[in-house]
Amino acid sequence: MSVCASSLSFIDGSVLNVALPAMRESLDASAAQIQWVVNGFTLPLAALILLGGALGDHQGRRRWLVIGTILFGLASVLCAVSRSLELLLVGRALQGVAAALLLPNSLALLNSAYEGEARGRAVGIWAAAGAISAAIAPLIGGWLVDHVGWPSIFYINIPFAAASVAVALWKVPESKDRQKVPIDFPGAVLATLGLGALAYGLTLWSSHRSFSPLVGASIAAGIVILVVFMLIERRAGEKAMIPLRYFGDWCFSSLNLTTFLLYGTFGSCLLLLPYVLISAGGYSPVAAGMSLLPLSILMGLGSPLMGKLATRFGPRVPLTVGPLVVAAGFLLATRVASDQVYWTNVFPAVTLIALGMSILVAPLTSTVLVSVDPKHTGMVSGFNSALSRAGGLFGVSLLGAVLAENGKALLAPYSVAMIIGAVIAALSGLVSFIGLRHTSTSKQRKAAPT
Image (cartoon, rainbow, N blue to C red; front, side, top):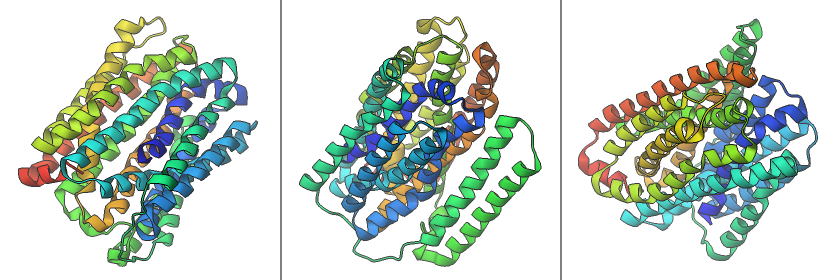
């Protein structure tokens, strides 16, 4: 059930990547507007996922997972029936709110249900199922875009949502924290406003390629609001969305910084690749979806194995090597051209990226969950997911210079974006190597199973 529910966000993201060119054309959208089709979902997810985890810890993880899944299904229907950009953005925002409720609680339910090596294996299966779902969805979605139209892609979510709710109500016991900690609603509001202002400013800056007074004011407002958010969280102490004392731990801080850097660049580059293949390479949406198939297959097969190995040997090596392999894949992806041959230009890059992600996904997820007290599991899973989504939010906000181009003109800025992504991915591996050095081997092994 946790796997099925959490797969909704993976499916939605992978389907959207192959549909964006068609959406832009049919809605006559600008680069900034098409960025908001992505970030309209990511912003509420990044800002509210901490609140979703806290609600689950406080009132019941199964309850809020079910509520979030039902809302996600309804929002998907709204996206499917929308015929204007404005209504689509409303539906995407509601999907983001729903995902913020279901994602942290799906992982927290897994964490409470398993221990030891079984927990590491369960997290690996959780990651693998998301990858497999993301593999199948673009193929179905690409066919739908070609033959039915892009609004139909959102109907794919409905059977997954229905199955998740049925299994949750039938088979899954409730799980929650017995210690009633007040929920930080002001923190959630400030986080949403701060991230939203920053994302808006960055989107305008990248799409218009000029630093206007509005851009400066938006970015400055976002920074100020987030500073106020941190000050309020500091005063809240143990009642904060996440206690700031955890950031004094090298392991916790490095793992979350790695998440922010790696998932931010991974999500952004993965959005660009099919977009460029369709717009500059002449691929159909189905062909673009199939081009990413190695990514999902290797992650689906490799994540459970790496979750088990990290349990035995610790997470430092996979969390250092994996990002470096991803970086090499991004560099290879710069070879994509308008007349590319898939097996020589695209397949090697996708395979390397897939290999790197399969090495690191399960160890990173599992290690984060046990880096804090058990009572904050849902809160921390939400925080880690928030960082990954915030990284993607800012990454996509900076892609305007690429998305503003069409056809072969996409290729030059696309290559620059991939090189920057490679540098950031390699940096995330360095962060893990340094940060986990300050954690003993025994502690790493204890952390890895989660």
